[in-house]
Image: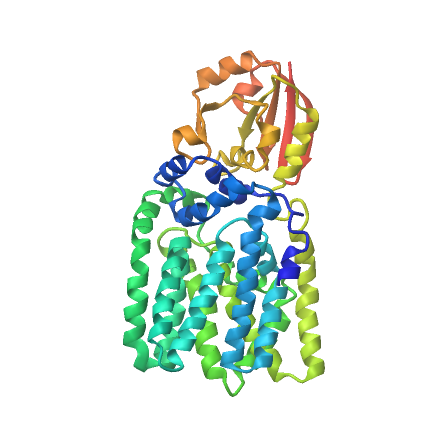
Length: 447
């Protein structure tokens, strides 16, 4: 896992969420705490963990992504330990290997966000639960409660893991149900202030849409690594569920794999949209456990063939994730364009005509600030730190028009759009050059 995750760790550009990490943690600690009362409280624990890293080591891709890689590496060890305890040492080894080669595991091992840490906590909590129900488990349940508390602080949706654990305890270890509840329920309490802040800041989820009928199929392809990989993965899971130890594996891994995304999808369709695939990254270890147990039941030749199929069918996704735009946005490519062509006194406008969150392009500018700092942000009224927001606030139309009138060269930074904002269209500036970096379009307007 460490080797695969370290492979081209800095190959992909930072994307918008990683840019938010840099933006939040580059400000002073009081300014960060002030921001969390207005926006992104759900990521507050992660920002606080990463704040000393940013201020002591820097913001290079390898530096900010290393905690995620180490967390995913530890999670691979945890998956192997679970497979060993639930089935056999060989099943544990195969589960750990399966986990390491899943493309989405690599992607989030190379992402400077909380998802890998949440996944690591989910694996550790599950291992402590299995230890607790296997014998005298008071000390294990105390540790379990502590890890669940950390899990909730890192990501509220991570607490959906408890739904899967509840099914496992009810089905296989009902005598410890009361002790489990006494550990799990108090562990959720530290997350209550974040729940309150998250509800206040729920407008941040305005970009999400209802899950829809295609969401389960899309999730299956995402978990397996590709559409083609679904067949061998499902086949191996079916074999795992036919094993003599299927009760323990099935009652632990299947609810862990199915319930969190199912609950989020249902909530998205009947209440408010809260589902996207990266919110259920912590379910990937359950898939790896089922794969490992299934592979363990096969003879050597079919086992090797099945594992090679899973690896091979996921390779295109692995390679794609390590391209400059492999994390969605090629902010580094856009920054390179600006560095090569900008001049002192140039202005810049950020525009996203098809985005539901219009300031996403400005957020991307924090990923590689050296290229953007020399440019005059013509629409900016108050900086992110001063306004206590992620992207700052915009000025009024009259001020923007006046600033454009005084500019001789203006860069238009857009995502998925070719339209021209009205103030720029009527400014007397003319299109002089267009550059692209993935979905980002960088246009130069000259007077």
